Image (cartoon, rainbow, N blue to C red; front, side, top):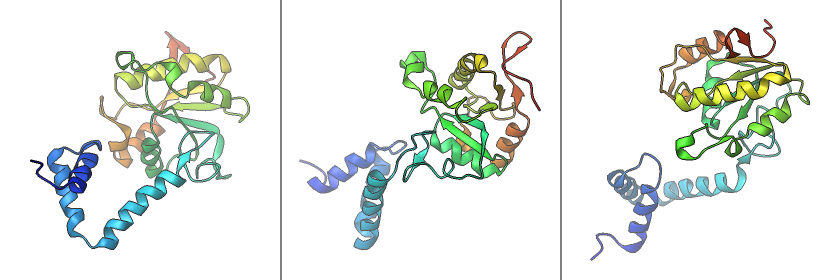
Length: 212
């Protein structure tokens, strides 16, 4: 005999599919929604529907967007000559909190992970390379996560970008190895951006022009 009515059990099951939400947490959230005022629950439902209907992927940088371009790409005050490459749109939020970056972004939508079957063809690598000349890009900052997948992705991108003649830099050490950018505090991430270093694709050979 089921423990809950069908609608409640369905809600628990759907909540349990969310990342980081286990069975017990799903039950707590479901019962909380039962107790709140109907208008509060409806606001949540409407917000979910709205984000699915109105939020898309920016065709230029693949950040989340509402409209033709994301807020960063649509801002003419941003420096189009510098692109910060991240794995996930959430990483853009982390970088923006530092207040120290005024360029544009490119979201790879993941990182290289052969063990998980994620190769270059699964990421937005081609789209990144296609932006360099038309947008007049002079520096690409590789801001992938400081873990094995992120480092592998950064070195792969450096090799792909090197023939294009841009300055290729990597965020400095200081972030915890194995961590994610979205969890880094603003001061640490800001210093990592300020102290970025030129990437070398071969011993003693910087990738791209050294530049200031």
